[in-house]
Image (cartoon, rainbow, N blue to C red):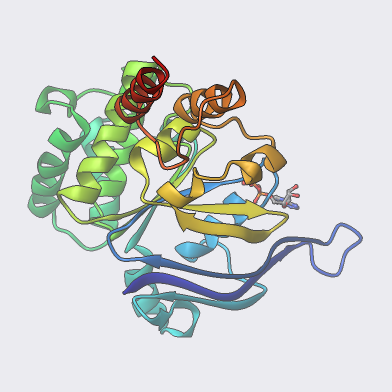
Length: 286
Ligand code: ADP
């Protein structure tokens, strides 16, 4: 079932001025419940404008957004609030949005705003903290004393504390070292697999798309130019070439070997499969 659906979704900036710009143009998109979707496309293609409409942060110029089948802009104000919290939006560099004097207050901000009492919010904070790999000793500290990676974990804990069904992540690993990036991605995989959260990941990293996503949605000039499952998407890299996006290393290797005379199937997506296929092709020529 589609947890998130858009119908003819269109967003224009500065309507009626000389700077009018259609950033999202009649987008029809369906995200199924429990999927891990990669949203890719060049800077300026409209990804950020698109995702900010998913939790009602931006109101579409025209078209509809259906969350669990409900048009979010057709709801009463109080219900709309409820719906908005079902979609947790993690902006790029979310650590810049920390503002409370302690980590605990920062994570508790959302749940309290949503009506949780002091003790309930305290329990929520302690429940989500381990997900982001932080211990309770951080709770009394100022978020501003923490490292960049730790601050980001606190910001993400604040989103998880709202218990959203859908997590929308705008380049959540930008600026992290490889180890930090892997841990962050593992957190989202866990949220997806263990807690059945639908994940929408905006990324420029094709390795992340290949390794973590089930589906890929490509945004170009405000529209969706391709929506496929990951296996099919990486079979034919012509669209990546067209978009000048570097394919994952394993796909590049497969393509290079084929250019040098191998006949490797475009189904091969892992190093193990590729190594096996290369070995068997070499053997058949012995
Ligand atoms: P992406 O996230 O893929 O980089 P954006 O959604 O940020 O794309 O931008 C899509 C288009 O909308 C771009 O042409 C961008 O210049 C324009 N745009 C983005 N934000 C604004 C704004 N606040 N005012 C006017 N135009 C904007």
